[in-house]
Amino acid sequence: MKELAIRMGYKAQRRGWWETTEGMRFLERRLRDFRFDKQVDAELLKWAERGNVVLDSWTMPWLVKNGFKIWIEVSPQERARRLVRRDRISAREAEKVVREKDGKTKRIYERLYGFKLGEDFSPFDLVLDTELLSANETFETLSLVIDRLVLRKESR
Image (cartoon, rainbow, N blue to C red; front, side, top):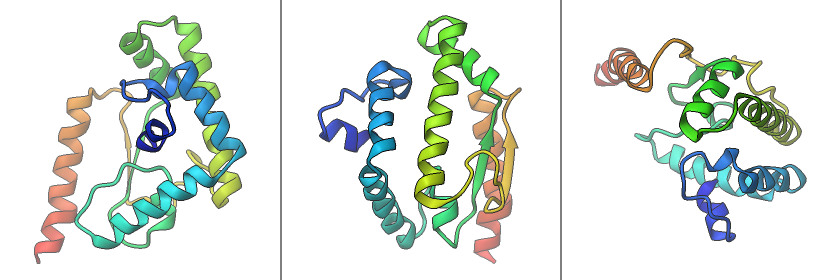
């Protein structure tokens, strides 16, 4: 999605771009025009069909039949705290951004595909609560799970 935004002239290269004013404008544009999401999802579906790929997508768990699907959970409050540390913005601004971004993103996917993002976990093989985990701890946990539950299963 960021690559598409960049091709459209947005300056989406930096980390945390989605939470910027420009990123929120693009999110608003997506809410009015589903073309962008459909285009990205069509490309991701092609990748998924090839197999042996890790996709970071909120839609693919519902759109792809195969694969090991993981939902990484963290509360909006913790996400806001992480934004404060990463982007050096106020807690109030971070909470506002998280709330607005979540609301618009949920509306996009409910209107487009009919699922309730963050509420319906039925397609997932694993839901990992990362509230108390660092990025490294999350990576290590997921690496262990994938090694044990996915790669070993495939090698049998």
